[in-house]
Length: 233
Image (cartoon, rainbow, N blue to C red):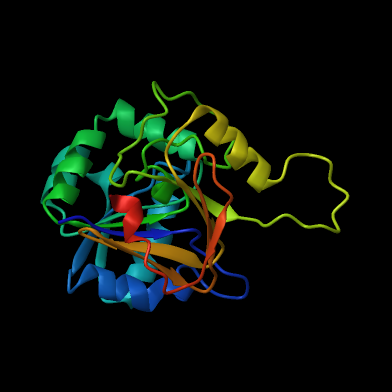
């Protein structure tokens, strides 16, 4: 049974790393005492892992970066839980492809290993990375991602500001353009929000709501606590 916690972001204003979601992360891990960390979305793997290790130590969970393992795939296969951190989604997916880690992650999630993603780590859990906000600083072989869920996310979703003088596309306009060419629904996940997936159940949580975009339909507003399980069917 798939068990996913997909965070829009890892840090809230005036709060520490993962503080806003700490209680939900502990619930999600369900007693796991160790977690494997995928740091490939940032260039400084060691520094990123050190930051994550310190935070998880405060939760009573030992963290080891898969970049430190002799074989990253084996580290994932043996992991109690997996955390895929945020950063640049294109760099993250390219690294997972290069190291042939997509299949091992899919297999372990199918077996019930808890998957925690933040920002880019949430993007790669989806069908594709086409709705990321990041610049393509590297080129993956494909935009196809882990497809742990049958929809896409747009983390850090920002609502249109009617007072803004910015003349570029709003996030909503960009997601409408996505649906001119693509089918999967997209959850515009605001800062501080997350999706929790347990088997065939999906619920919106966190500090902010989300907007659900479907092809050919107006976006629908959802509040924390709303059941979004229909997205999994």
